Amino acid sequence: MLYIFGGLPGTGKSSLSFILANQKRAVYLRIDTIEQAIRKADMDDIGPEGYGVAYGIALDNLRLGLDVVADSVNPLAITRAAWRETAVLADHPFVEIEIICSNAEEHQARVESRTTDIAGLKLPTWKDVLCRTYEPWQTASIVVDTAGRSIEQSMTEMLEALCLKGH
Image 1 (cartoon, helix red, strand yellow):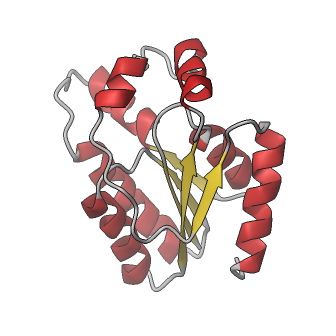
Image 2 (spheres, one colour):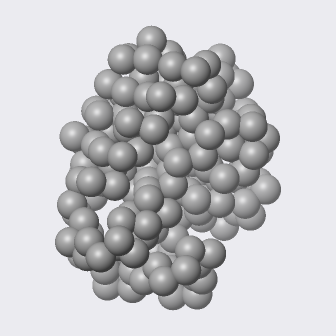
């Protein structure tokens, strides 16, 4: 199974995807980690390279029969389609999970108080989040709104939705 996560920074997407990967003992692919490794190799202008690397690693692991959890903002329809195509190429099912935070003040507070576990990663500001291109999802089969909820409550909701979808 390929679990395709997406959502703006500060919604709780990385926390939820990390917990799911741990529970499923799945391969965890985090675009932030991949892109930061590319930056450390003196490639500051990162375009689609991080996503391309992740699609390839996901395909290899799906072909090995492993579940993969893909953690990325996934802002464009084209990136979401590429994740779906990766699952199709591996002949594996997938589920798309969009994480949102519908309360703007709460979302802003999260963005402004975040820390990172990735050395050297520059986190986006609230202005960066507001100005980011983020196309509406047309295909997400599960949407989890983390506003006013703890990670545990959001995780419970997501797991229940996955069970209802047969995943």
